[in-house]
Length: 343
Image (cartoon, rainbow, N blue to C red; front, side, top):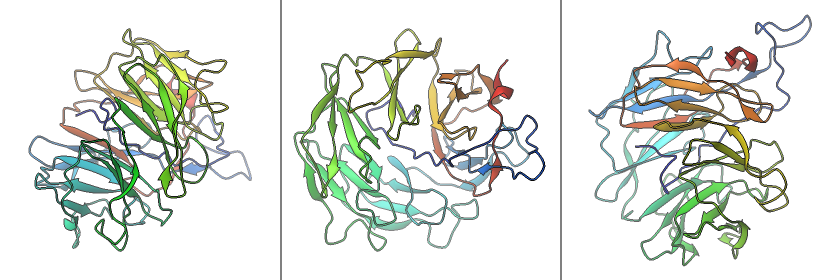
């Protein structure tokens, strides 16, 4: 299951520290501290329902503690990564086939915790789910889209989605092909950009606890894959689009539109892979990409100087059913020099 290629796009928030400095051997000059950052890691699910942790350290997943089992018996229909407990790592909420939602807090590098699997909601039988902090209450919430196109907000309050304000309608007529949660307006809450069947993109800002009317911000977007991230460091997210011929194109979001100068710049070529994982992999101030090839190899493509550098193999044997990018280890790591990834 490739979460980045379906319309049920889940946004994995990239936590970046400003002012990162790079050193050729990760050793700072005299009287200067190493700038550290929290890199993302991978948790994977096997076909037997086991959850395995693969920390990303020193530019690789091939580590002595790689593949540590952190959970088992996971046979949910939906898996939602988010900040549900505020413990500085991501957690997982899974949806069971009966519509129940269960919370699996993640702490001390495991899901094996006393309160794992606590039911936090029931009756969740919707077509799409989106994670984001729409209520500014310190934890993520859920948006759910009904089959009829209504968008419902479920705040996560007091450890449950079934609180007094659960299921408030915040949009209607939402029957689109793609949904992109992101920081599109800088108003303190996530917004939504949607794609219509004709290739037009519309922005729906989220303000005053609902979605405002949509306005067109792009046209001609007829690509097989889309990725959200702040690649231009302009204060809002941007879009990467993968063309059917494998070209990776960058569409900065500037002045409220994707159709401005410099739009559609090619930043990669030959990208015909099975999975794409956007994440804070190098600590260079912008999101990078790890891809999975058909043989199970993982390659890191660092994003530097407004383009992707050459790929470097960072893992092999990754043949699993699900992949989850997140902050799964809370250790600080020195920023890696980008030029080490160029062949």
